Length: 291
Length: 324
Image (cartoon, helix red, strand yellow):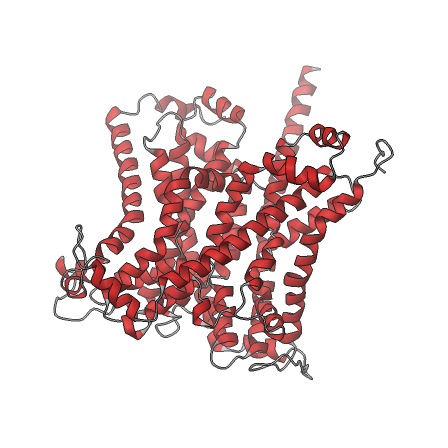
């Protein structure tokens, strides 16, 4: 090994050097943390300030008193946060419930039963996992247009039943936690296969379901492309489509209203994140080990 | 054949439980993909569902490839992706190295992780509007530059009408929303490494830096390839931020391939056939690049391993020969 000379030098490294290194480390970490926070902090503060205030001084670290006026101006335009909130809630909840339930079911089928096409089916799921959603967008729109299903929530909810990435995750989880003895003893007790899945297997999967539900919900909530393609009726707009209206002429000089609108649209996500951040961080890490 | 227990075969439930997935996949993914392929060979424009196939089947593909807006959008997409991915990977690697270093622990890691990942969870459309406001006229950045005297106070500063500034902001937003994610993936990759490799490096007296470069980094290859490929697939489909930030402006500087496809299909003209051809070209590009990256990096690994194996065999033979 060539590392011998280098090894000698380690104990010599001066204390001052390690302290400087430590300071640099913390400085960079704190700097990045500040960069993460500051845009949102300015957003919240400016949401409470009047547009003339913002125009003369765009950065303030203390709130002002114009939150009511900003909200008033905001709702006089086309932006309607409540409609966006409700629509996004319907679509995201529907899609999340369907995808976690059916992904668990598919994963259970892959783990608990020995069938001829099991391995080919799993390889197929792995293969379609990487297909980008936008490849099918034009055909999907044409298909829905032909069925007169644009401005309908179903095309944004039903396809969630086939979520290959989630099936993969659920399968990994089941393989690690499910003992087939439990399933067998349920059979001896006369439990049917569907009953076993719903009553015995699903409860075992709750930690995995919770993790995947968070990511599915947030992903659906933030989705812009497909909802914007399909939903043209303003009363059907989701929150992200609603946000795009803030670029309209009405809000061009109403800075305060734009900031308060952004605060309102991001508030539900901040709430979810700070309540569940521990699970979210752990969930991201789990996603990385899939290979 | 698997043995039947107690004379009952449950194999059929494997099929039954897979039916919903397969059915929905066929209807809502496979059929739309085939439909897109058919549209790309047709003359479909405007609202309608009737398909008339072109006499020269590849005409749409040829005109997309000759379309200056598309090629510029493709170049922009690649540029913005690289401007975001290279710093993202570097920062994520450095942070992952610091956060997994057992000797010099960083305090408050949990909070740092939460804050670094936070932008990733917030709606990209909202972030795009927010950055538009931050960098816009009378915005905080404008204000800051003027108050520190970097630019004259009385001249209106139009940062967002500069193409490179706008591209830079889009790339920065992508970096800012994704470096925390990449860091978490790399950390979990490092934590998943065999602890024995660390221990032996420790016993050999390797410094943390040596351990990172000579032990961790080579072993992290698969995770890094995974991050590269998923980031590339996502980056080539970049849509939300450029669409909402400035809708491809100024002067097409932030126009991406996905935004081009969207504007073709759902803009005023509804040029469906061109949009379909462009999205298939993007699909082919994504597939070729991901498979290519995967195999090139894999192969290099395999070649190196084979060489090492040969060298080891030689050593062993030599040693064995001397002993006898």
